[in-house]
Image 1: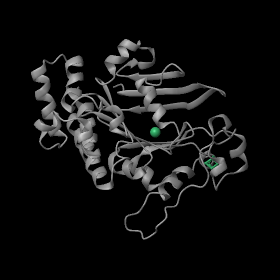
Image 2 (image 1 turned 45 degrees about the vertical axis):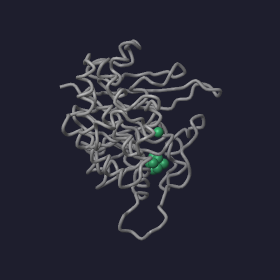
Image 3 (image 1 turned 90 degrees about the vertical axis):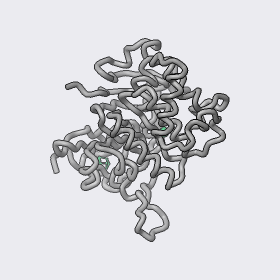
Image 4 (image 1 turned 180 degrees about the vertical axis):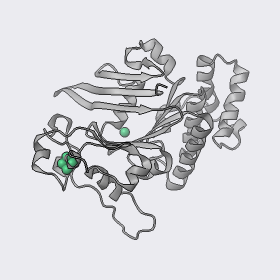
Length: 322
Ligand code: SF4
Ligand code: MG
C-alpha cells in the first residue's frame, strides 16, 4: 500500500538579494496513515519551510523541486485551485501562535464553521452542531457560550484548543503541527499534547509534528527525523533514536533536554550556530560545531545511509558500518 505522504528529494529555494538560497536541500520522508512523525531541529534548520512546502504556502519567491506525493497525487503539480481543496480539508495545519491564524474580528464558532460550510457543504444549523461537538471534543467548557466569543476573550491554551478543533473540523487525513505548544506554559503544553494524541488516535489522522523539543517527540511520535541546515541528518523510530542516537548533532540535542530530576540549572547546549544559507560548509554541514570532526568531514559531504534496518544517519563516523 502506498504511504499517505511521500516526499522525494524536496528542494525548496527562495529568491534573495544574494541569489537563490536553498533552504530545504533534498528531503525525503514517508508518513503512513495514522502514523506520527516528528521533525526536529533548531530554528532555521528548514523544518517549518518543509511544512509550508507541503502546504504550498511559501508564495511566488519560492521554487520547489522534487515530489510531494499525498494520497497518490503530486502536490507540486496541482493548480492553486486544486491545492485550495487540499488545504484545510485533506491536510490541516496548526501553528505556534494561534492569534496569527485566528481572525480577531470573527467569533470562534463562525471561524470553525466556515470550512465546514465551504468544504463539506453543511447547512448552517448542521455546521453549528458540529462545531459545538468539536469544541467539546477538544475539552472546551461552556462550548455553546464560547461559540459566540472572540479569540481575544480566550486564554492561549483555549485558543490552541480552538485551533485543533478548527484543524479537525473536516476530518483531515494529515495534520501538520508546527511548534503547537511552544508558546504555552508547561502544564497547558502537556494538556494540549495529550489532546492531540487523543485526537490522532481516535480519528486515525496522521500527524507531522514539527518541534525543536525532543521531549515532545518522545511523548508523541512513532518515528522521528532530525534536520540540520536543510537536510535530514538522522532518521529512526523514536525508541531506537532515544536508545542509541548516532549523529553527533542528535547526541547534542539529547543533552539539552531538561531533566526534571536533575538539579542542574543551566542546560547544556551545542556550541556554535547553524551555518548561514549562503555559507554552507563544503563537507559535513555540522563539521564547524562537531567535536568529533575528522579531516574527511571538512572535505566531503556524508550521505544519509542506513545503520540498521530502521535507523539512518548522515555522518562519516558510520560510513563503514558501526
Ligand atoms: Fe561530525 Fe564528521 Fe559526523 Fe559531520 S560527518 S557529524 S563532522 S563526525
Ligand atoms: Mg519554525
